[in-house]
Image (cartoon, rainbow over all chains, first blue to last red; front, side, top):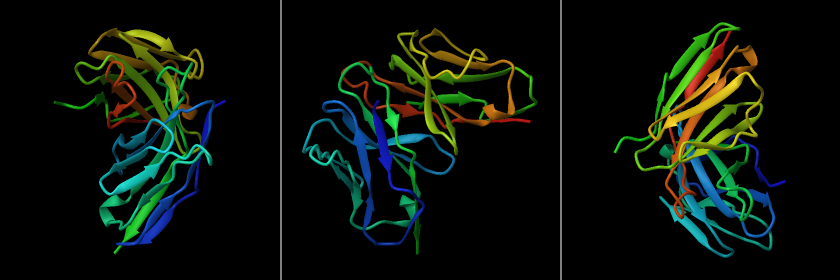
Length: 114
Length: 115
């Protein structure tokens, strides 16, 4: 079945450091790919998405590129802030047969320190 | 516009008791999802509705769990009887009709503790 694999956390960075959170997926065809963010005590929020190969999703300085050849959707940010501390979830919706059911990865906690 | 509203935010109950979680989706959204989040299992989709009709309940763990959506603005998730292993954060989410259904808007969650 469809699945998403994320790097283990927590990831601890200093403010202004470069961020990469790895995400790879297993799915048939070309699923839609998403990054959601969960701030402490809150529900998840959509951060960015990409719906076809080579698309780049971007929002709030975060970017991720849909790489079909490596089945990856790694999240990057050039300069993180303390306010980016949260849990980040990679997710997919299959291209067919899955309705709009999101399959989530296990989440990666990011801690940004001054 | 208000986001997805869930109540209660916290619930502590004893094993064997009935628990009812409530959700009000965003107005105009016709998909509603119930998720459970635990450290061990991460985020799991329990059930989702489209236009108040249950579409996929394959994630509901067992018969002790039931969900209803009597109208477009209200849904409940009921656990009866509750067990300690049901302790988790339960999220409700909603989304717009196709083609914008792929962005889900999550509520703040209900933290359930079963003693």
